[in-house]
Every structure is written in structure tokens, then in C-alpha cells.
Amino acid sequence: MQTLHPENIPAAVSAFRPAGEVPVLNPRYLDGGQCRIFRDAIISILQGEYDVLQEIGRTNFPWAPKCHGASLTFKNLVGFPFIVLSWIEGLLLFWTTTYPSKPVRDKVLCQIAKIHMTLIECTTENRGIATQYFSRLTDNKLRRVRNGQIPGISELDCFDQKTISLSIIDWGFASKVPIQLAGRLPRFLQLSELVLPPSLTLQEDRKAYIASLTSYPSQAASWMLLIQLSEDVDFRHCVLESMISKGMHLSLARLRWNLPYRQP
Image (cartoon, rainbow, N blue to C red; front, side, top):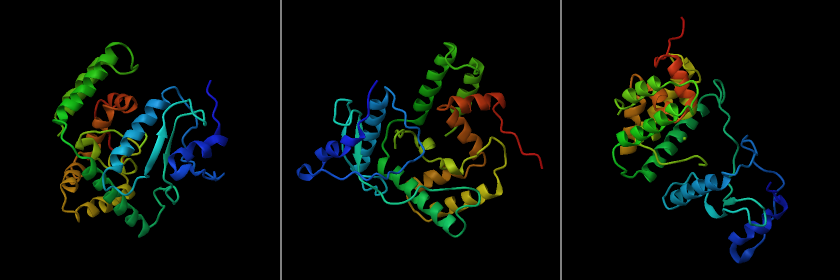
């Protein structure tokens, strides 16, 4: 069992500061709500996050913390792998159907749309056609289903999914994905339950978000609008998400790959 030594954080961080200056550790910290459990895979997770932040740091994307360095090993003063990032002032965004209220709500949506679009612009690269990416996902999932590694999902569900997905043109867990995934509506603008139509509040939020994109004459904004304005945007999202999420795959399989409509 590894032992965390938070008292050694200042000394460990000093290696990434000019002249080895030792910082003072503020006892107050920002808790994002994540469970504080360390796993053996923490090194690979942090390595992925470090690589993403390094790549973003080489662009002009201003909405990410600056990565000053990392110690991706348990053999350090802290006793755990860590990344040193610049501090960004602010509060966690709290979002419900009633908070924040307008006009702040629309302003936040516009800012998020700009961040979303800019991130796509800064990280776009040509990695071949999206069909190859989605085919690999479905083939890998089909193999796991055949081996009994995904209970509740049948082989038929995988074939149904592959047919649907091939007909369709989320820092710690960030990864390079096709524009069909990167350009989707943000998670908080997606269906909270698999029932159509979206609530009136969600529809209004989507309108404000999409309206802000129309003001940008960029290729990324055009891609995002093409994805987000499709008539079956919610079903398309669910199908794409099911390739990544076992929970979504199982939910769609139970619904026979159709989203039900809310009773009037």
C-alpha cells in the first residue's frame, strides 16, 4: 500500500519553480467532487492528462492551466505521482434548470461554446476517416461481448449498433476523437434521461448555445452546427456514446435502439 505525504508537497513542487523556491501550501483546496481513491492505474491516467496538457500548452488555447512539470512515479517526496499546474481563480460552475438565471445563463453558454469551438480548432488533425475509428470501437466491444465480459448485452445488440453507427456521418480523461464526438453538445446540454422531447429549459439552453456558434465564421463552428442541428441529434449522441459507455449501450439495447416519447 502506498502512503501519501501531503506535507512534502511544497518541497516536491519546488523542483519546478525558479531557483528551487519552496512554495507555501495553502490549507484550503478546490475539491471538484471526485473520489479521492488512488489506483494502480494512476500513473497511466496522469501520463495521459500530462500529454494532453503539454499538447494544449503548445497552442493558443487560453482556458487550460499551464503545466509546469510532473513526477509520474511513486518514488518522490510526496509518495504519489503528481502534476504541477498553474492555479486558476474561480468557483465551480453550478448548473440546474433554474440556476444561473438569465442573462447570466446565456452569457455562460456563449462562453462555453467559444471554449468548445476553440479547443477543436487548436487540436484538429487529420487521422483518417471516422469510420475506421468507430469500426475499431464496435469490433473491440463485439469481441468483449463474445467473451462474456459485458453482461446484459448480446451479440445482436452489437451488430445493430455497428449498422447504425456506420451510417452516421469528454482533461484527465481527454483524448483525440473524431469531430463527430468532439463536436457534440456539451454533456450538460444532453438528455438527462432517455426520453424525448428535451425539456423546455434544455431546448432554450441549446438554442442559446447554438446561436452563439453562428456568429463564428470558422470551420470548427460549421462542423459543430452540422452535428448539433440534426433532427435526430439526441439519438445520434446516444448511439455514439454507446460505443464508449457500457451503460448507454445497455440502456439503448433495452429500448430496442429507439428513444421513447414523453407522455403528454
